[in-house]
Image (cartoon, rainbow, N blue to C red; front, side, top):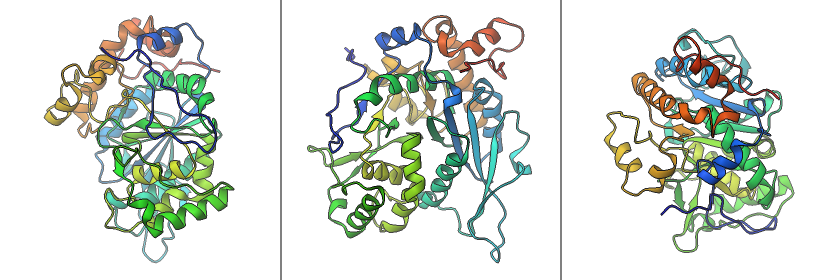
Length: 387
């Protein structure tokens, strides 16, 4: 039987840090029912989403994103950090506001595009400098309460993301050792690293002490799970932070510095964007808030040719399957436009009954479009929730 407590308690005190992530499931029936009767405290005007975009990425994914979830999230700030041409003689890794690059195609959503100039070749397992740039650019936007970085092959369901943020903001945040420091995502599958040997390495100790001095806090020891020696962090195409945590990322340039300081032979490489963010969150004493509704793959009900995803997400008697099979805040590794569209269309059909009941406070734009003329699954009206 699935556990009914959707939010597990954590220790109090600024210097305490849970060994294990805080588990939150906004699709739990008790939680969903409770929030169906509340007016949202957080709206899309409190949320910003950033993406790293490479020219090598299939532009069809972005076009599909514009036609699907982006069109339903009126008020949400969306930022694309796009690779731009950079002559070696003049490149200084500067980010400047630019018109939408032609290779991205025509945008149908209100988004900001910033060019990322780098003479360095893109390396997937050493992309912390560009990830730092995304967080820096999000910080330059008009202030929001929460910031989410997603991969280009990640599909978002904005109404479910908004409900999750409301649950975290109202029920989890007040119980945190430092309520202003919120860090969330999923650690469902491979999102942990062998941590014990890191604490004994000079790069970790030196960087921990330096950043602690900059933010006026004691340096952290790498506190890992006592049984497994693992340190959990958010993976699966989505990582989210509160504004205060984002400000610390900007002030310290922690994500970039972790990638630069860590040796190349450490696995998983700390220079990978999600690993480096997890280490930074630990430096700042921000425990991971993990939800199974952020899918590291696609939901099992969404048919794609990815057999690995189905094996992971559709295990017999899996809590993941029973409680978030429809309520997926995100799905990851949808690397083809047809997979992306198929999963979006499938989920919208499944969520339709809930938009009139449990998801009604978060789905005003959806309900009008789905009951009106035209295709309710694509390009819906943007009369979502206003402050």
